[in-house]
Structures are given as structure tokens and as C-alpha cells.
Length: 173
Image 1: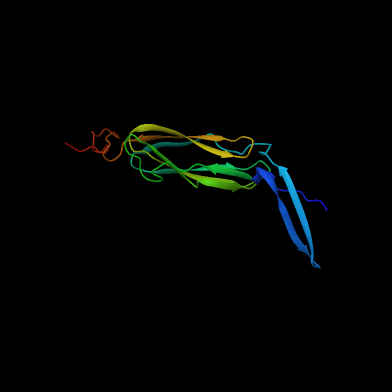
Image 2: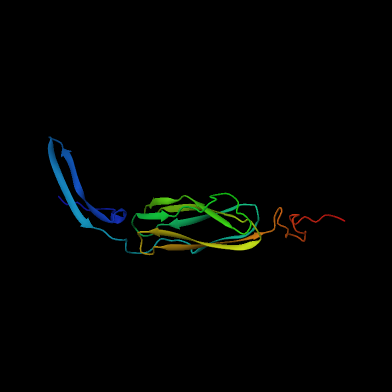
């Protein structure tokens, strides 16, 4: 009898013992040892950037970052923890990007992982951050550039010609 590891992509090192009973009460023991490394073949399909365009300071905009597994094997991904505040508004001068889910994720061949990425600008400014996702595929690590521009909003001035502090609202004389 011969056994083959069908999905070796989930393990760095493999060793162990498998025991089961066959009809009639006889026990069969299978021991396996070996070393498995990263998956060879095509890398995951990961976009290089996510753009949020212009977002009013104080508002939120969410985009979906889709990762497709075209490797032919199951891939283990590690998505870093989102910076604080996780989904809150950025303070002036501190643009906020956040995302979910985070942590380790199994992505089976042919499947897609959708990461919800949110931009919450706190001021009039251009914001950029790199989200780095690691995995055991041949293209890892994957760097995704997050970009957005905060524009005038309540208390920030700017907008359509309003003065400082009026959120871009024009008041008649």
C-alpha cells in the first residue's frame, strides 16, 4: 500500500504516526518523516496597490483587496494586525488605514480571500502605507501599496472655497 501527501503546502516539517483499525480488528500503523518547503510554481494573484482616491477628512471609504490562489496548492497566509485605531478616524496629520481579517489564513487552491481595507483620513493630505502579506508561495512576501487623499471636511476648512474651520461651506454676506 502506498500513501501520498496530497496537500503538503500547509507544513514546513512533517513527521508523525497514523494508526487506524481495519475491519476485523487489525491495527495498521503508518509512520512518515520528511521535510517540506515552500510551494513552487506560480505565485498568488495579489494586486500591487489599492487606491481610495479623494476622501473627505472625517469620512471612511472601504475597498476590497482580493487575493486569488492560482498556485495549485493550499497556501498559508499571514496578514499583519491592523494599526490603531482599527476602524476609527485618523487624527489630523495621521491618516488611518485599517483592514480585516488579520492573522493566519488558509487559502485553498482556486479560492479567493477578500480583505476589507478602510481609509479614514484625518486631514487634507496624501496618505500612503504598505501592507505586507507573507505566505508559503513562491511570490512571498506580497507588498500592497495603500493610497488615498484626505480633502477638506468639517472643521478642516478647504473644500469649495470656505475659510478655515467652516468645513468648506460658503456663507452669504
